[in-house]
Length: 323
Image: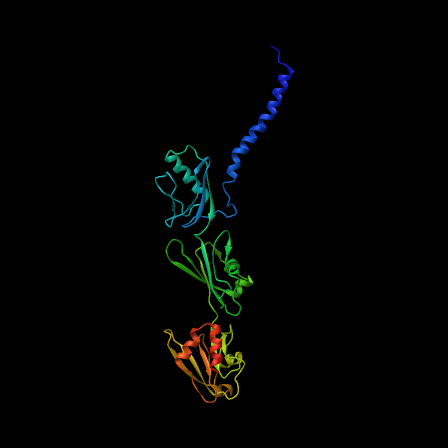
C-alpha cells in the first residue's frame, strides 16, 4: 500500500521531536542531582570528627539526611549493619564507600549517591592574646596566618609583643610543634614563608609586650612597654612616665619577681644615676620601679604583688593612688 504524504510528514516531525524529548527526559532526571549539593559554597576538604555531612541517595528519601561524624570518625546509616569510617576522606570518596555499603547489604543495585559538607567542626583555629577580638573559627578553604589575625581584628595596638607563637599538631604523632613568627617581617611581607598556611588545629597566641610598672613620685605613673631594640633602664622608664615630680627621693626601688613568683627588692641610687655618677640600671619585663617621695616611704610586698597581678586599667589606677 502506498505511503501517504501525510504519514511521511508525521514521521519527519516525530524524528525531529524525539531527540528533543530525550534531551528533556535527561534534564528532568539530572535536575535533582544538581540540587544534591546545597552547600557547594563550602570547599571539599577531608572530613573529621563532629563535621556535618549531607547525604542523598537518588530516589531513596529514607537515605536523604544530614549525618554527624562521630568522635571516632565514622557515620551510621539506617539499615546498614556496620558504621562507615569517613575521617580523612573527601566527599567523593565517601560517596564511593556509601555506594559500596548499600550494594553489599543488597539494599540497592547501582545506587547514585552524593555527599556534601554542611558544616565543618573538625578544623578549629584559635587566635588569642594581644588581639582586638580573640576568636575561634574553622579552617575552610585556603587560610593563612595573616587571614587568622585579620579574623581576630588584628593586633591590639601597643599591647602585642614582637613575635607570634603558633602551636600546631605534628601529624599523627600526638605531639605539637611550636613556631615563633616575628611580627614585623610577617606584616611587611619581606619573607612570604612566615605567612603560614593553616589547615586546622592551630593555636595562635600573640603574647603581650613585656612591660614595667613605674609608680610613686613621677608625673604619669603606670605600666609602660619594654622598648623594642632599645635600652630599657631606670632613666628611660622614668622618661616614659614623664619624669620625676618635686621632692622625690634619691633612693628608688626595683621589685623583681623570680621564676617562682617571689619578689626581690633592689635598691637604686637614683640621685647618682641622674647625676651620671653611677651607671644606669637595666629593667626587665614585670619589674616594678618605685620612686618614693622625699620621706622615703616604701611600699609593701602586698602592694607590689597587687601591682603586677591586676589588669592594666586597674594597675594604672593603683599606681596613681600610690603617689
